[in-house]
Length: 441
Image (cartoon, rainbow, N blue to C red; front, side, top):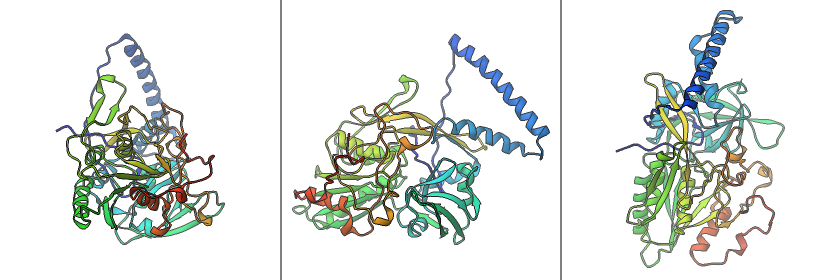
């Protein structure tokens, strides 16, 4: 069975991913040969610069470090999601998909030379220490992040279980930074959590790792057993602040609620390599109504699920605009020298929408009430706000709020979803600000 590409939003501290084999293309046109000749001249220039640095730099450099830095520079110049992984990072990435690894429990990327938190994982050391989406990490154990690569910063945040790390964080527009002390632990990602909401089944999907579909299927069966058939009104699928993960899991989760039709297509530079993935017969929820919750922290694989269910009118989306990461990263092993994480395609919803740098607009926009101390700090810039992002095919749009209250009774998006499934009025949950940037365009 052919493995599927991996969708990633950033780097997960203390974690890793599965692999794919690359494909080789033979260039035969005259234009390709001419370009190749110019490329070899440029490579000769690189060799000259490398030799000059190796021989004349004020301090003797590590040659392997020079080569790795050059590789990183080439890849990071492409887009925010392409990068090189050294052997250790590659091994860690392979562990992530199994759902258990050592670390802090935060998904991160680079922005303006600093490490940006995409989202903390529920019930992890970072989450419990109060780390929030959009936090910018400026120092790690007193060492300045500016000038580091993402891999170097992640390496500093790794460490033995039960050891401590101090992060200095810039939050929102505040001039001052705050320090957060976190004790590293084994991160056991529970990709699916379930609970009964009286006559509604609630499914929280936090990540797309190797266990997601299996856990989802079990959770649905348990909820159907806990709520009698004559009382069960439907299901809420909560994918807020879900940063994504494995493409095959996104396809299987979508298929769990669909009987037929396309789920997603991936399109690369070569039109002949377009792949389409379709649903098989069988709906685990027996056609009961669905609401999907999304927000500014919903990205990548979670956007695939949301887009598929929205296009097929199988679910109603409630919340705010998603992150807008519509690209596929393929992990290419490099023998014993680590791996290459390379953006190889964009993905499209069943109706042909690319959500790259655009995101998915919910059917019903519901905005949370933001505490005074967090106002202005809850908004994600989305994919469109990442420097060097791939351009979108539609009008680009930023992200939206990634704030989710810890108190269920204050969670307007969840309460709106429950009310919708029960056929109740939603007026109390809807924003009256027609100019709000999270409203659909």
